[in-house]
Length: 409
Length: 114
Image (cartoon, rainbow over all chains, first blue to last red; front, side, top):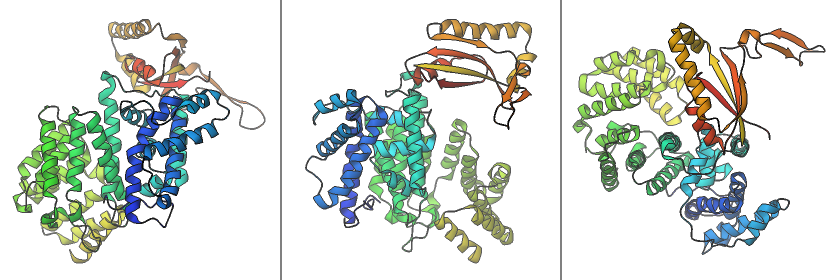
């Protein structure tokens, strides 16, 4: 996935240089935003200037090559642009005019930037769009393509969010200790959504699949900046455990392969070992949380070479802990799936049926019912449940799998 | 930065308050009063409003003549019951203050234009 770069506006660029472009831009966008914040003190202005510089880089670097000092190049472009647009605002202008790159070596303030983008007073879609634009250096067009929404929608979300940051005086600062738990929860939720969006995308949607790369990059950055937060490490481990097995999730034709049918020899064992070690270090702090537990469940699967060796007892136990911390019908659904292999399909179906009211509109609920009904020797009811699931999902890979089951199952 | 806090009561909150003993109700009002004292350095004014049945709404967008109706402008289960103007550094400081509010279950924070 990391080799599938984002197409730039220059169609002539090769895919390798596009991947390189995305990587270089992401490495510097957040730092540029931090520097511009220092100069202008105004989030909306800094964000605009970063975006302008990123767009210009994506236009020019494919033909001119990536400059030897991309950070200085981006800063100069942003600064000149700033002097231009801020013509009437003498205050910023005079400050900007005085600054040259490199500014004083400065501490990494990107944490502050991330917390501002993910402020709880902003709606979640705006948190995501702002984080991707200003911390990861994506353009509005790239964000729109990754989420399959019109570019104008993303642009509007950004504009509204920046107006609220300015007008309601949302501060640019690290949260205090007593706010940290809630505020970190917001940031982790944004990264987790990027993971899900990318994870669920199909083989053709490379732009969405790149979101997993952004999610891992953000989680890695956050882990560097907050090394003692176990939930940050837990989410990073979760992302890495998914990525270590990504090759096995689709067959040669791009169709989804279920966990029990995956070719486990294509899993990246080394990456799995590293992720498990990261998770174990986090667990030693004895501050469990939903991301550590989800990673632990995935680690149970990733740790065995063969489906039949799966430790379902342990997995059901981890789901119980997860439900204790964060009760949710979807988690109960996943627990029921695991319960099938510990207590049989009848017990799992009984458990599932208690969720009928809340999950009636969720395709996985019906797809899971179908599997259990088939295991209980009720193929007609199973087919009906699969058809229900098919009507409820818009994901092409999942649709293909369900169609196959309806026709052959 | 100046904000107005709009205190919002729900039907459930109102019922709970009514079902309390007089001593518990006094205690609840005392806690709210203490919150105002604790935050006195940030509070610039405000007031408790009389109950929703006293509200009158005038609609000027319904044809040639203003339409006067009985009741608050939103028909709903949530009613603005008071407001307080505060002066703080930023939204985070307003949020911190509101988190400790011991009274009604909903508070809307709105920055003032100037």
